[in-house]
Length: 571
Image 1 (cartoon, one colour):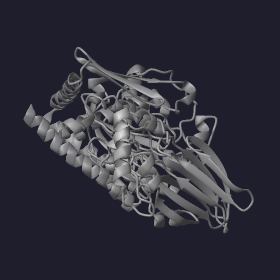
Image 2 (cartoon, rainbow, N blue to C red):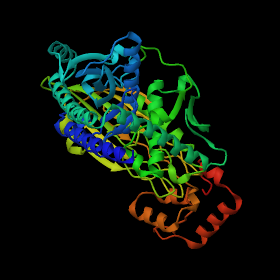
Image 3 (cartoon, one colour):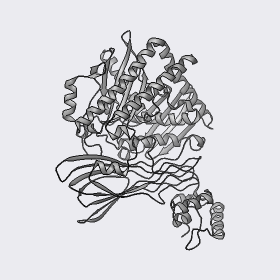
Image 4 (cartoon, helix red, strand yellow):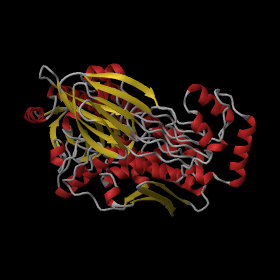
């Protein structure tokens, strides 16, 4: 059995890498090619993930597993089976897909009239979502809904379906080009899986899937067994995650505080984010688990809230919810197994800009202004980076100015935005954009402040400032969702949050604080008010006497709670 597992893993891992690379290199969309919005994987006959690509986004991999499980159940309930060469797709949240912009293509490998496994590729097509950030009342107003449908055979979509898609999608030429790249990637993986099943047999593949599930379950039980109570609980507002092992079963229950404060998040996407978080925990303990599946069979996940109505819009805000759920799971390990987790990352500020140039041509641009990542027991968080559980990536200044009639006047890091701690979070970013011509509408999603762990403090929050000749300055702080009308000459200043800190701030090494001061990461005020390091007037040299007195006071009086609450004790 070990030899079969190693052989299967080696072949599927190489194939998944080729699928990822093919899709990203051939795609014309920045969302797929450069921003990480794709995932290629191999799935068991019931829908659970066997193996995903190293470059695939972990959340989209697990979301595809949820959608495939729905398809298998749907076919069984209707008495319909699968045929060799069938091609299916969906982007419908009602079919457990991640969202309207995340199209899942799947093809079964069939033996004796039964689907023994699936090959699936998920990719983000912004052309399918006409209003992913704009406030709309119904899901159908948000974009084009595609329930699970058999749309072709042998890697070819029926021409009439392609014509219908092109007529209802934004930028149809680009969308069809990306769709062809996605289908080609799927065919590469399907050919490899067909050959593998022919060589090893369906029984060997079923044994591999069973082994992956059992291995994931034992690994999680081993991790939970190191905790004093054998269970763990973590909270990142508005979600709480409770993890426990009962006999041979590992269960995770996710609850939400109030429906009104909960982001639009389907239970299927919540389950996918829980498994993505558990894979990160397992990978920290067992690096070989980074691409392997089995968690759908190993863990029972319960999203303890009422499902959304079928026509409720989901939008890009769903990824803010998935990140909060995943980080609630990670936070559960902070006290007992600190080496397996980290403080929460900052969610990016999301902008959806739609406008018309002076010559009448229209454009649309998505922009993600990423914030700082959370710190951990191993060190400071990364600065201005993409969070682990959101498929967004960074854009260059040149890419922004090519995509829309904008001038990037400033693009810089934000001093003092990182969450203070023994290890600080990463810095957020500040961007100043000016509209050069025509008019535009921009929808903006401002996230909240990421919390710290083990005594670390929150990162600074997101902020939006609109400067116009007509109305002057208009400011909005997160969390919030706003829509703005822009004219030529209007300027938009966007600030993303910093990552959460880890550990008590006044226990941070003075050498690290001096380095942060020299690099401009923190200012004199934060050095004094958060870290207890006092500088001499007019210089960056610390006052040894005052610094010793202040830090000794903080440690001896246990005033950490006041600092974490945001009190400026030393003014």
